[in-house]
Amino acid sequence: MAACLGLAFSSGVFAQDDANSYVHEQSDGYEWPTDSAVLEKLDQWQDQKFGVLFHWGLYSVPGICESWPLCSEDWITRPIDNYEEYKKWYWGFSETFNPTAFNPDQWADIMEAAGMKYMIFTTKHHDGFCMFDSKYTDFSIAKGPFASNPKKDVARYVFDAFRKKNFMIGCYFSKPDWHCEWFWNPYYATANRMQNYKRDRHPDWWKNYQDFTYNQLMELTSNYGKFDILWLDGGWITGDEIGLDKVLAHARTHGHEGLISVDRTIQGKNENYQTPERSIPEKQLNHPWESCITLSYAWGWVPDAKFKTPNEVVNLLAEVTAKGGCLLLGVGPTAEGLIQPEVETCLRQVGKWLKKNGQAIYNTRITPNYHDGNVWFTADKDGKTLYAIYSLPEKEQLPATVEWEGNLPSGTMKLLNKNVNVRYQCKGNKVTVTLPKGLAQEPLAFRFIVKK
Image (cartoon, rainbow, N blue to C red; front, side, top):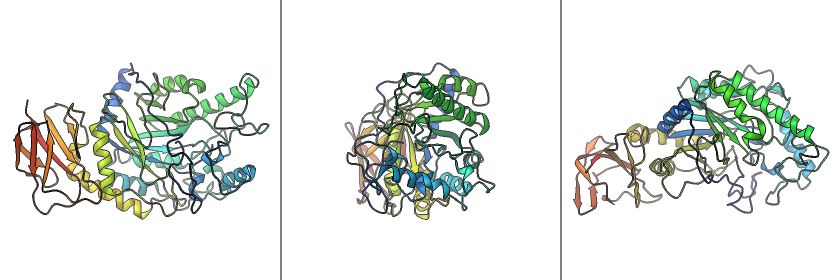
């Protein structure tokens, strides 16, 4: 992912000077795929609406920002002033990372209870540390102190745990690799996130890096079961530069039919859906997209994190869905390999809401009049049945009535969480819904047939 935003230096957490910098923005345009299998898979993915993105790696051991403090750019802060000492310290966690409590079934149970339908797991972040057993490097969870554990090939076990729950499966992979000598060559200093040499002066180094990255992608798509999504991070390197076309052509004809390619922020045929990060597009979009947003302020686990409330997550999900996207929520397992209790409590509450109100989210599509005040609208695929989702603002109580303009109902209106009809009246273009007494202080969803 991009940088850690809004972090203050405390307990080993890193601050970013400009909280709006280094975030993956939405690319300028969208190019629809021409492969019918990819289009079918995208349509299936758009039905899911809610997914989880796991960041888990060396950074989880001290509980700090993932990878980025390795990068020599002037917004970075570190707890160690000497850069070479910092690199040695950070990469040294490969010799202590030993998640003996690792339990991917716990992860899958919690995310299923949360109402999530797809998952993406970070197999390698920019720091180059592999969370899979790669034969092309020893810099891997499977080669350190965890090597003797039966679950040393952790990516395999994570993917399989979620397959058992019928999740759509996504593989995150960083195209840049800051540990690879063919990307950051030790002969030169590290200037920034790019390779630290001129390609035309060292074409052999660049070719070695291209081959290394291509081989790892082939390794993942050949040995780790069926993927639905290949989610490529590090948009300063394009998929074209590391042979993505060849990887996709092989994968889509060898067990990954319709594989969705997400070459993030690289507009074109291999960015099958867009991925605005830590943000939601200002307006509704009619092509596939996903907002990736953290549950806390960090992608990985950090100590004493403040998490979004269940209502905040539901409100995000309502807005994203009404605007035509999916919500990918960032969760960081602990260094021991578990989802911490505070995260579990929050996500199970979100799941309880979705069990009662999920009709308004899953399998829906956009409707032209999609927003008014605190109300967001979604539609069944027939376009006739609409859902109005009232997003309860934080620290506010439910009002006596909910109002909106347009999307006039015809016939009965049902409050989904109680499965009861509610009274409403229309005056001109304004709808006023009277709420029953005694409702829980949470977002509400209503179902009705829209008047034509």
